[in-house]
Amino acid sequence: MESSRVRARWRLSNGSRCRKNVHEIRRFLGLTGFFRRFVPRYAEIAAPLSGLLKSDREFIWSREVSDAFTALRDKLVERPILQPFNSKKRTELHTDASSRGLAAMLLQEGSDSKMHLVYAISRTTNETEKFYHSSKLELLAIIWAVSRLRTLLININFTIITDCQALVYLNTQRTKNAQIVRWHHLLSEFDYEIVHREGAKLAHVDALSRAPMEYEFDKDPVDDSAIMSIWETNRNENCEIGVFIIIDDNQEILAFQFRDEEIEAKRKILNKPASQRSRDEKESVKDFEISSGVLYKRIGDKLRYVVPKCMRKSLAVRYHDYGGHQGVARTFELMSRRYYFAGMRRYIKQHVHSCFHCLASKTRPGRQLGELHPIPPGKRPFHTIHIDHVGPFVRSSRGNKFVFVLIDNLTKFVILVAMRDTKTANVVKSLEQFVCDFGAPVRIISDRGTCFTSKNFGEFCNKHGIKHILTSPRHAQANGQVERVNAVLIPLMQSFIERKDTRDWDLKLRQVQRDLNEAQTPQPAKVHSRPYTDLLLVMTKELCASFQRLSYLTIRVTRGGATVSNACHNHRYARAASWPR
Image (tube, rainbow, N blue to C red):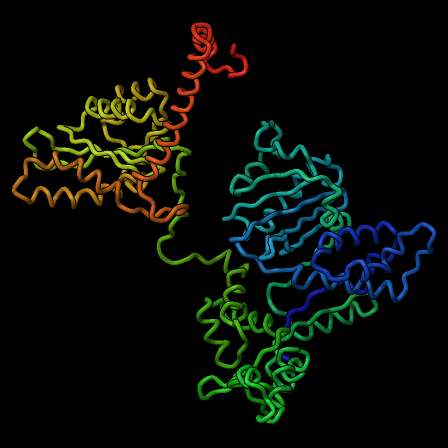
């Protein structure tokens, strides 16, 4: 066995830490019970352990109890409870602390919308930390956990779950305690939210904090002599050593293949005479062969070992972790020379993207583009509008050189106004007309042109209660709604200017505006919608509602005479039932 292919780790065996008393049994069941949704027949498996909690039963650690403990313990480190880290999934960090130790569990949402375990850590408290206040201990657990898992948490949004209510206000309350200030500064680089959850619902992480264990794995592989030394030193202790070896010998691969149900099914089909195989069976074993008892996959003119599920992780570790931490393509190319299993590229990609060393030390090549943060649409037409100027064009016979462009963020309705210049007075005049026709918007988004940053424009916004939002300098993409209209408008205007009626282009703006508003514009919520149609539908509904109220009031006035008219005047929005009949 090559020492470079050996990794040793300590594992607790046969529940040596749960044989003391009922409290530790209850703690262990709290840990496993949190994940019971992933364990079929959990109650049946845990029945021997649950029986020890009865007050009228003698506490005896029998073989049946030991087997139940081992079965539940092994389930915690297997799928579906355990899953690899994925930075795109919803992430939660559950923390807890006691005078004995600190503990944390990193959980992520799986494809089944349930929280799965990704990472679990714990450590003992030192002589000073044991005397910390409970709130300070809980904060220490958070600081230690995010520092330990910094590689995974640094660039994602995650939620910290704790049973300490005081920590929810960590970011809103000021303190003069120097240590707390330093800890708060350490947390400032993370994008997190602290949520309180009662302690009864955090039994899984509470079990780790009250029975902390620290595993310090060697970063470099150890040789065989070190393994034997560890074994000789601890052979009388209740511990075992799990040795992981990358196996590529035919006999060893054959032994693992016999344990794989899918491979065994293919082997049985291949052992049948060809005449006895069904069409589906022939298709399932196409290009598969058995040589010297080992199942191979023929790809081209070469045979590749068919890798059983239990060997896939070790192969990925060998070719990626011990192969220079190559990327997905290179790791796949190296593995596929000798091995095959369904979904190999996807498996390697998942392994590489969750590698601690790669996440900590590698950076993606090229320019890193940030995430898009589109401006949310308004709740009604003309709630949010985007404005800008286009030009200068050839001066028209009426002296216009620019086009003032306005677009509604929700319906994409466009309004075009020809202008002599880009002064604030002309902009305010056009917007005053817009307010008369459609009402005042809630928000106006524009660039930092002088006409939009002037004092008069600010007074106009304050007068109508409009919130004015300025885009960042030299970044036209921030006002993309109106810039997209400009990109369509400029070629249209150029086509008019190139004709004989060059000086009359401003007379064509109404036709251009109509063409833009009648065009179909795909939207996320409603495909092939037209700005005219959307706007008219909303306005028609509001207009109909106004006419209904007006007609109702007219009928009431006709029936009641002058008395009802006075009632309408004094109680404009009163219920009809309160008016005299």
